[in-house]
Image 1 (cartoon, rainbow, N blue to C red):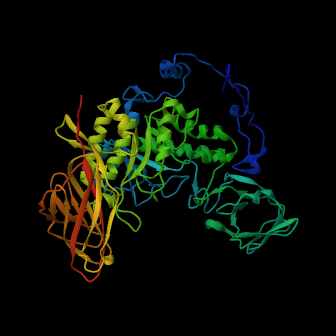
Image 2 (tube, helix red, strand yellow):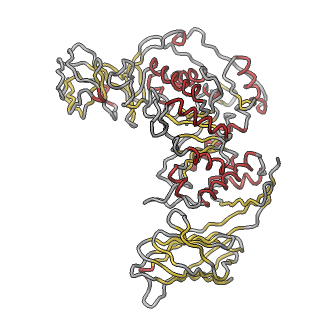
Image 3 (cartoon, helix red, strand yellow):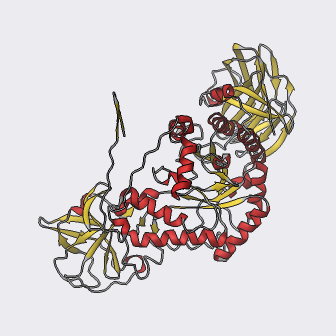
Length: 614
């Protein structure tokens, strides 16, 4: 559809799919595309429908059309998924198993999560057998976990990559199916013996696009090649592995077709359209036999490697959906025009190589406008609560509340990824989970005003939500400073341990402190002097330890993951006037090694009261 100056132009098309073709697929010219069998392969029966309504009534009208035309119309507790607030439920992603499932459920209840979702429960993709680290009892073991969660008011979901196929799956090894997805046929120039590791073929354009596995199939043998050498009219495939992926190396006639296979950088293969149907069937069987209530069709675009475009994506999900015996919340990382009817919402993973505040922020925000235009439930994507590692600090309350304030501002759900190791070892995890519960409770009850939401969705603002009672909450604007650094190894001659800085605050208030010692060595008795007073913390802090001082006047020394080592009784008061102030920091160095001290301070403004309307 194109909006032009004096009207709108619509262009519709239908494609015949019942003939074998060679088309451009994923940037590869002349890729083999197999025909679609049955009525779906024909143009006959293709239809176009228009509807008209006021903009404000469009969503309701689409719902009526779904019912009239027998289109998918999934419900949540009797309400259509496109209007139900349950469609925007936040959820917990973790790597749990039947051995620690009770702990996962306990943590989910603290956060108020109604869905817990396993990040990778399968041993293989294709047959979708369960990883014994997840459950040793197959579908029945999963069913028991689902029933246990249901008794606690929690639903369970699992993650997979749609039609991506692992090389350990029984469709690949030890006898590969004939339905592995093929790029095309290669022509041998001579017979192959079973030990041959250099293979000569006629030159082919199928090698124009580099692949990852470099896999080929001939009869019931899979072969991978290492590299190619141009020989003019032929190509030499070098460093070939015969009988790859547990198949059997055998001799082959020159006349036997040698197929080049599609793969993906995840080191996976793909099924053709016929085998893809079996993937859909197995995923539907899993849902029906176990009672699982959530799945993400991650990598759904992999279906388009068949050369059948959006049709293949839709076929995969529709076939699955039409076999379900209960409603399953489902999403994908991208939205197809047709799967709008089935998908509950969109959601997507994030690169964990970035901090929470910088992981595709612009994309998260841009997607909210996309959802609004497409009358679709809103989600913000995945966030990660992490432990400290070489590159990142342990996730803090301030980081989390930044994400939660964005969620509240856009009225959008999210996935919070917290591995079971993090749930066990993060020293403030229960506090973080309680914070999630409070923010989401208010968002789901639509307790934030439009003015508040406008401010909250600005990614440059910081907020803190404080629970006063079950019905009443205070929302504080925060100012979080940059990192101030004092390198004790670089003091001027005669200068005591410390530094002088200029601190700014838009608010006159108490300030909270996050002090970290970085590097070998220990400091003692840090203190801060401002125009409003002095505060001193009688304690010792060593490498990768924190001094955390909060607005309630409490201070603790913690390890790198915020586990409390000792409580500290502060002396004095931490007060900062509005505007710019001179601040003196001092401490004693009690070790021969001189570490760096890294400090951030936080001030807060006047709160707005928020009442939970039940």
